Image (cartoon, rainbow, N blue to C red; front, side, top):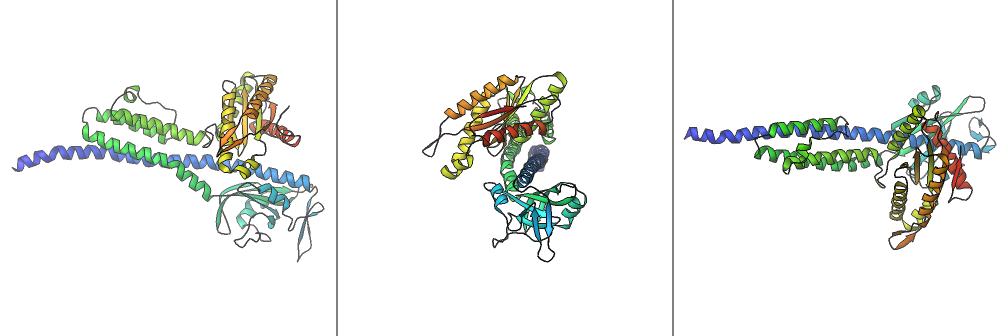
Length: 433
């Protein structure tokens, strides 16, 4: 009797061991994948936010210089007055308030380390001004004379991403700095939501591994070993690897699990490279592809042209019809741009309602003509949402790419041409070198 009982327990024990041997590494791999996915997404988002803050800081400084030419000066000791040229900055918030209107940014101008004007407010609505900057910021930025990005600044008990850029007077002396911030909790929530598919797919994969290990004893080890290797590749950020076709083509649980791995790779790649709303290249991917095209042009002399486009009066669409309508307009415009650029280059969402359009291996005049054809399609498009029929136009600035270009240089030229298009009537393509 005892021998029979022992023989009955033995197979069950072996299966449990096999299940543990299969599921424990899978759980470990899932943890690694989630950790690496979080780190990769955090790094990508940090870089994207940093660039947005840098662009916003530069815009704010340029606007301040254009509206109030002259140096930053201090008048008085007990009751301090700060001037920009002949303009008193204290309590003068119109310019910075207009800059942040419709964004989730905050901006502060400092004289030395003193907050002079700011869009940031205490809970009672009072502006956060007339206080000194944090000692670390003062040391990193003002004393060293270097701009600085932080992803963990706390102001009035709230966590922010922050970028500080040094302000100079005409004699080269440091006058102060400008601070641009963005709420950090929104980013943390975004990352968590984007990782939910990874959790779900990973959990399904673990359940399937357990089921297969219970039912199969034949080629279990070899197939799982191949899948584990693929999980490892994904965990290391190698998202373009391929699985053994013999596993993918199986009509059993192994094949389903292999397809789940491929879906996970696709989902991770989409999170890193695609804009969530429009499903076109995001800013990070667009920047990478443009750099590759510039490098090829430098090596082989191939032609390329770069345009920046902006949807006209987009804020009015959001204010009039709601953000659902705004999202629908963004998707419709992105689809037209993506279809129009097939075989000619690529399009990326550059931020908000701005798009980057890059013509690859296409001459300058042909690029301008084709961009005008795309604009005609956008003008003719009618977006139907919530019972409304919405038509929009766009403004574009396009410039010829040069072999000695860098990303920031060619984009700056296109952006300046876009500004000309917006300031001279909108709904047009403005070209230049």
